[in-house]
Image (cartoon, rainbow, N blue to C red; front, side):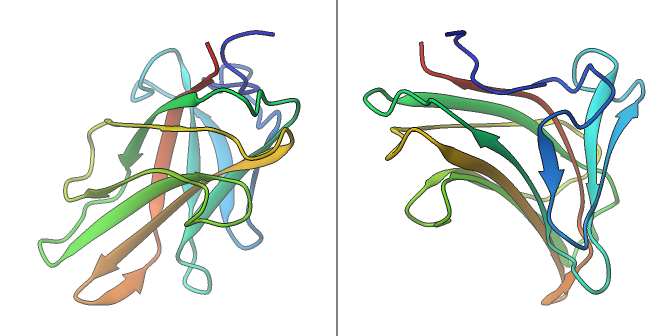
Length: 155
């Protein structure tokens, strides 16, 4: 088994290939010079109706006896007003609290930020979720988050 259990971790296939967005979100693989590494990245955009973004990948045959280390790069695409911030988190399974791996508040757009964390999977077949939200002046606004270079490693 390879160390990185993620399918299409850097999005270099140019297609979603294993990744899917929540209903109401728009997810695209984009080719561009702002990719963290390589030529492609995942671009997920919320809407007025569903401002929070969520993207996931189903994982099978995880080693549930060993800890897995997660590394991913995130970037807020749209400017963040001085009265606002965004938050990006990652969790494994269906419970965001029990499966929490990492999260961070983001105050500035336009730069790649590395998120890292570790978790021991409670089961062999689980879904890895990334969630992003943005707040401005106390109100949730549509998030526009970029993801790249995802590694979930068991070795």
